[in-house]
Length: 323
Image (tube, rainbow, N blue to C red):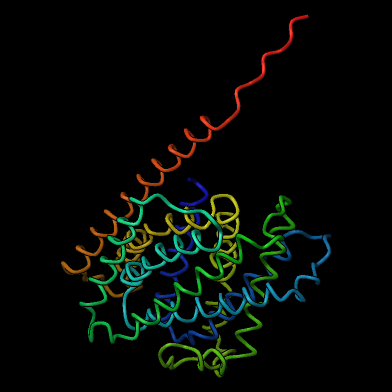
């Protein structure tokens, strides 16, 4: 639980920091995200001095596939912050939980309990309620951007759970593995901006490397990358390995509430516009909370049922022979 909550907290800090950078400074969003990955990755690789850099990781297709998916996740979520607040993006991200359940069922072979689907339906209703009341409703670019972000996020999380190098127990080796993934993702940013623009669900105005060497962009990339982007990736990969995709994504459903608290704090220091959430946001938040509770209770009951069935199916111990 501590690992999962820490992961959600670090991601929340990353998202709010991105919003502060975008709204308060002359920052190039695309270039900033790229530098975050570069500095975050380099810092992780250098954390274990004296160890060999795992060059083999740069040749594995699964790592490049992961990099492409993470690029799409980061670009689309960051782009959505141009249209909505961080807490609102957290509400729309709730579509990821039902996707994770479907991925666990059809790809990983872990079927949830029947009552859990009710919780997923409630989560979706919260996201739909939010999307319906955005400016231009479902036509708001943030809706498609966040949907695309969740699809690619779930796909990359499945890859992370199945990745053989994410199973290693050596902490330093795992840090270097994570650092390599960040550097590969940064390479995708630099190499194929036109490809990202081509497959994006809506036009993203800032996909360009023109502002790559802006001073404020570089500083924001350095600070956010080292402090938040790198640690967020380390904790995410470890959480997926330890808890599995379903519990990992479930833990992120509290993201809107953590983001709301952090944005309120940031606004007190005039770093972001004050959050002015209306009844739509609070109704969506309530639905999300109800869905979280329903899914959590269902998972607990389903796990207890499976454990009881396993005990019944287990063969009785053979009594030892008398001597």
